[in-house]
Length: 550
Image 1 (cartoon, helix red, strand yellow):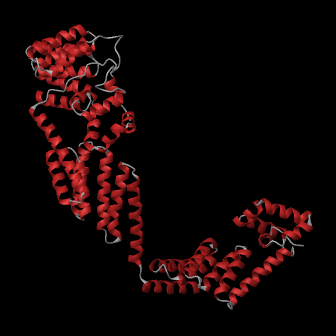
Image 2 (image 1 turned 30 degrees about the vertical axis):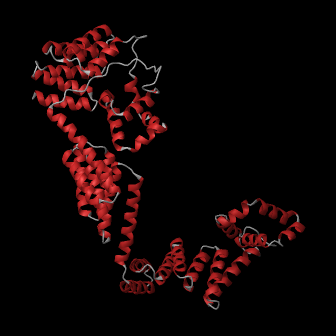
């Protein structure tokens, strides 16, 4: 039981949760009150929280229980130094060196405790240097350390130090880390006249059990296997990449990146089932270990991509879409969102293809025709809509539904269907007739006339189109002659003012001056009428009822 509590304390200390570490070490001490290592570890945890009085008490107990253990004096010296009792700290380090003369930690502590000091205690620059996003900004800005950020092992090392700056001494032999530290502290290590702020003593690494030491070594080996896998993946040596990622997984089951990386390889190889299995394991394991939600989202996105690759019908896209949606709830990533949109679009297109059946479409159109003849227009619309779903390229179904909408007074819907007829087949005369008739009913006579005239380009002798032009001309001339009642004129002008083209003409400063000249300067007005562009705009206003010709 004491050993279990100690392991929990070590884990909490390594993750930077010193308060929890103290709780676990205290529990272990209660179970094994004569274990000197437990007091030593709790002393280090107290020191990490700057509770140097408590750290000193535990360090004294450590030395009392195990006076021939050099690390006890290292804890004692660190606690004294934290309390600014440097002479006593130096004495403690010296006593430790009597036991272990070659101990580098004791030598370093003695040197720090013995050096001259200025004013009062200051904050620890080593710890502060690794706090927040500013660390990465400084390393990116410096040309010397910027290149290191492309090296995964360096990035992981810096992330580990950022999580627990007190473990910096574990990486002091890495020249890259020392160079990064120099950038963060704005000093050059090894140079002359280098001045640094006074630093508080750093806790030494926790006393690791054999099992913990072996676990750490396995994690380091797993990272190396991952790097080899990454290199093989870039070279498209997929079998080798899988071998390395699998080896990394065997060494370290607590890092789901090995699973997601292997899933990426399977995806490239077209082994989608294997990819999905790895992604499912990564999500399950990631949630058990409370892994970063971004990594879980990555696994889900990768699974969704594999599902899309396997899709053969519209229904196959449903699990992929659901998986992408789950990924977005974990982390809203633009790439995942695009994949979701693409999957939804592909599903819709496949649904249309699967539903396509010209024979059934024709049967539905005929049923619609029967209901139309019986003046049962809602029922007719239902069958015409089904015909369009079965064959969305048949202009006749759109034309017939436009006629139904016109009968029902749903003019905007009818206009949309008529325009779709023309879009699908520019030579389909009935489409122009439908559109022109709807515009005429909406009292947009100038637009209706343009539609009829466009249709006549394809069928110059079509009597219905010719009659449509005649009706429009009659209505426009009626307005020009002033034969409309005041209510009719007001309604027509209000409708015209909603036309964007009319709005643009009236907001044009040049055209406003032209209209003023028409009222006040007839000679200037005649000159304006010689301009074809101005003439067309004036005709538009006349047709809309905005300008009346007397």
